[in-house]
Length: 236
Ligand SMILES: Nc1ncnc2c1ncn2[C@@H]1O[C@H](COP(=O)(O)OP(=O)(O)O)[C@@H](O)[C@H]1O
Ligand SMILES: [Mg+2]
Image (cartoon, rainbow, N blue to C red; front, top):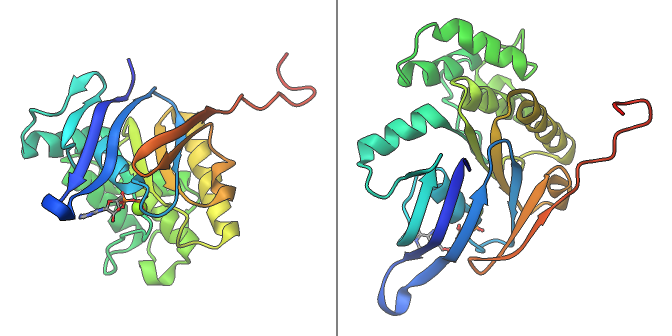
């Protein structure tokens, strides 16, 4: 069963002459375990589409199914529950809470979801993103790349099926951006977590297995890259 399916999804903003068609008649199936990027110029609909995939926003027309389940009839409360249980979010500007330490930022995500053992799980998640030893630092005591790692730990600490990342490398230099992408790819392979992210950076696109090109709110191209050939001596 696909992790997410969009059927005839459109999203408009405003009305009358000011009406904007941000996303138009999109059909899209995302299978569990994908590492997929939405690419397109500014204004092409990447954020609007990601917000609907992540159930932060609802389509004007069409439907979004998560793990085969339609989301259209769900109350705000049920949608919040679905997001908390199944979906993690990573943002361009990291969105960490400045007065909390790294471990407290991650622990808060566990507590908000009603989980126990928050401190231990937060430390484990920070270890997985390579931040052991920096748990007690506040965001302003961490580099941009380290802050985004904390945000990745926060998104993953409750073991979501799906992670949505809107331009996760846009506030990073290219070396840190590449490291963050590499880390996301490792976590995708290790845990089978589905990642859907957006970018307008060609370097970032290289890391994706599937690239969905958006233009004026429509899918212009949808390309799946073949798995890289095994290196000599690896596998059979
Ligand atoms: N809240 C909003 N109100 C009105 N128009 C919006 C809103 N959000 C996005 N748009 C418009 O929808 C289109 C798609 O925007 P967006 O999804 O943010 O694209 P991208 O993330 O690719 O830059 C743009 O024309 C944008 O101006
Ligand atoms: Mg955007």
